[in-house]
Image (cartoon, rainbow, N blue to C red; front, top):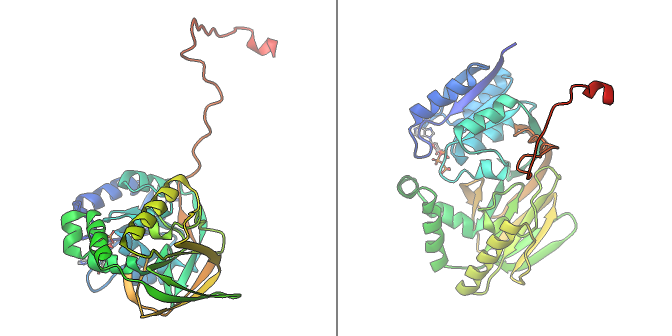
Length: 325
Ligand SMILES: Nc1ncnc2c1ncn2[C@@H]1O[C@H](COP(=O)(O)OP(=O)(O)OP(=O)(O)O)[C@@H](O)[C@H]1O
């Protein structure tokens, strides 16, 4: 029987031609999947469309847009059995990178066609679904400053420009972090709580690896004393993220827990999965095995035979091979 899915598509995401993008997706998926296509509008977003699709009892939901669209649709799927597909067409594509899903339309559609799924954790941050991470302080200010116009003009550079602007007005705050068994107090410039994080979210990269199905959240505190230390700390995080090592600087700390309650003085902006949602205090709790996403199926093992290229190589089929075994 032909598969079916609701495709939630943001026609204004990213910088490419969305009509062409939609045609491409339909051309690849439609031969095997009946698509119920729902376009987001300013008034009716991915969250509402995905919630309605869940209510209709669709057998799969595919979201296509920037990180805002993907995370809003994913939030509606959390706690259901409906497999969720991701076709990333945004500026930063953090969602796809964090969940190791390809970010070209062709490859992302191929993943959905293959049909392999993985169950992953999610979290709630003050009742808002979170799949990737909550940023407090520096990252939230950076997202706040990278506006739509800048993203259209500069793409992912908008975040980098906003990051440098933010560094100029570098500020620290007092933070209190409560888990089930401890209360930690420190000064910080950024606190990040991650369920999953792309390597580009450097402020989340304290631990060596952020595992998306371990039932735990990873918190990273970055607390440099001045701007020079902030640059050095960010660079260290970038390096350790690329090499898969944990950080080793006194001004960066990290820990794991199922649940964090975070208060700051003064209150700080909070960004959940790339969208500013308010300010501290926040309570963030992991929801283990929260939902299923389409992921690439395992690559085939390397071939077990490779002979070509050997000097003086000849290979002859044996006519009596059956007898000789
Ligand atoms: N038809 C539409 N017209 C105008 N705005 C829309 C429409 N559909 C969705 N939006 C808005 O698009 C925003 C979400 O954009 P999304 O995150 O998908 O793309 P992006 O901003 O290009 O990507 P990124 O988040 O990676 O920068 C939401 O603010 C939503 O209100």
